[in-house]
Image 1 (cartoon, one colour):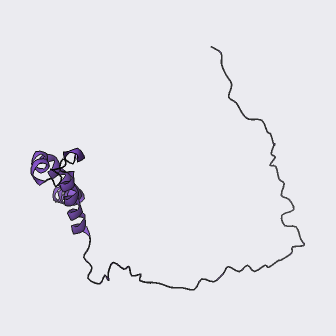
Image 2 (tube, helix red, strand yellow):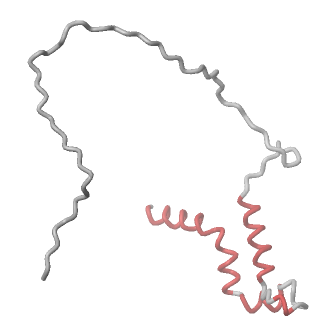
Image 3 (tube, one colour):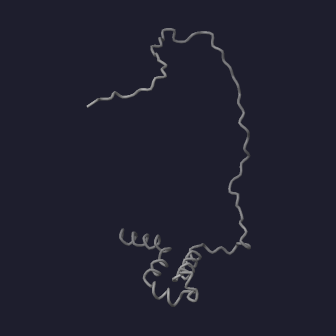
Length: 124
């Protein structure tokens, strides 16, 4: 079952590449027979025009068909709308007159230094 699912996923992922694979396999036939620009060899098309047409067809077939489109106009749907109120701060001050935890002692110390640490160098 896992193999079938993995093959199916692989086919779905590689579907846009099928025209390129077909172009590589049938390069000689496409370049000599199906090429639109056979009369213009200076363009060095070699069937790439046919490849571009096939890739355009493939991309069109992947797009979902929507019948409610009107001349390519986009329609936005609003799913949720909520008024945004500005943030208001309320300043409440509660002055404390008594010290809490009088027995607390701050044992932390910090040394400000502008020197950059360089690791020691060894002369060998």
